[in-house]
Structures are given as C-alpha cells and as structure tokens.
Image (cartoon, rainbow, N blue to C red; front, side, top):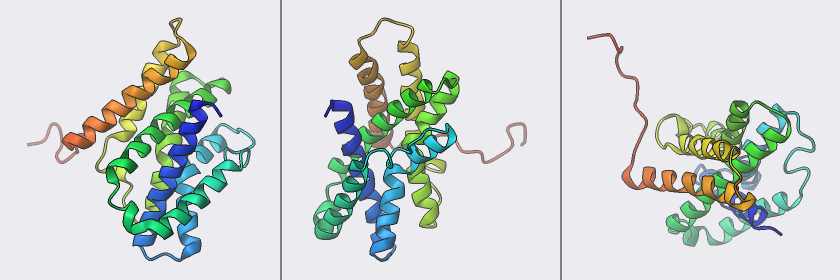
Length: 206
C-alpha cells in the first residue's frame, strides 16, 4: 500500500464518519446513516467518474472503499460520544482527505486527456461534491455555498499541481507540495473564519 492510497483511505474514513454523524443528528435509521456516509465519502469521486466516463466507478473498482465506509459507520455508532469531541483530529483527516481527493481526481482526469482547466474542476468535484450531496439529502444548504473556502483551497492546490507539471519535479513532491498548499489554506481559513465575499447590493447601485 503506497502513501497516497493510504491517505485516500484515511480521507474516505473521515468523510464517512462526518456523513454518519450528520445522519445520526438528523435521526436517520441505520440504512439512512450508511447511505449518507457512503455518498459523503465517495460521492464526489463517483460524480467525477460519471462525468469523464471512467469505468469502473471509483468504489466499484476497489471494494476497500466499501469496507472502510462500513467500518466508519460501525465505529460512529459504537463511539459517537467519544468521536464528537475529536474535532481537531477529524479536521486533520478531513483536510488530508480533500487534499488527496483533489489531486487524485485531477490526475485521473488528465489521464482521460481533459483540458487542464476541466481536469482542475474534476479534482474539485472529487473533493467537495460528496459533502454537497450529503447536505442536499439532509436538507441543508451546502456548506461550500455559504461558509468555508475549502473548494477554493482545492482549486488553488490544483493550480499549483498544474504549474509544477512544467518543471522537472520529483513525482512525490509533485503531489505533496500542492497537498500542503491545500492543507495550509484550509487550516488558515478555518482558524481565522475567513469567507468569500457575498453579493448583497448591485455593484453600481447606491
């Protein structure tokens, strides 16, 4: 198991737990909790694969994702009261997850000969649209539309990845440097509660 794959599994685990916690808070039954955990963890990658016509779909091609999600749901049910306070730990895994999902999604899109800009969008979709699907299914306004800048962090890291393609950079560094960029931006945004500007009035209005 290489480090990128291990981080991918860790990110899937963290995303699944976050989805399970939301579903439990909404008083869903066990089936509903599993579904929400599933779409949170692999929904973004699945949407990416459908859009670029990649087969097999991410979780269909590797059953370890299914076992990871089921394990996350089981652990959430057994240790919910202990997991909830571990926000810093979960934030760490969540941030690692979006970093890895962004770059692995971008890499996969490039292998399908997509334009770099479109590949960048596919990387962002891989990282954030699982959360969007989760929020829609649980009747919440998706977080990326009103609060945190993590989608923008994904785009920034993806841009760094594309820039490094023009230089003779070690393959591991080519992945690690953009991942660190995403991690730093995401951490700073959350720490200082930064948000993107909101449209309240006409730019040329009074």
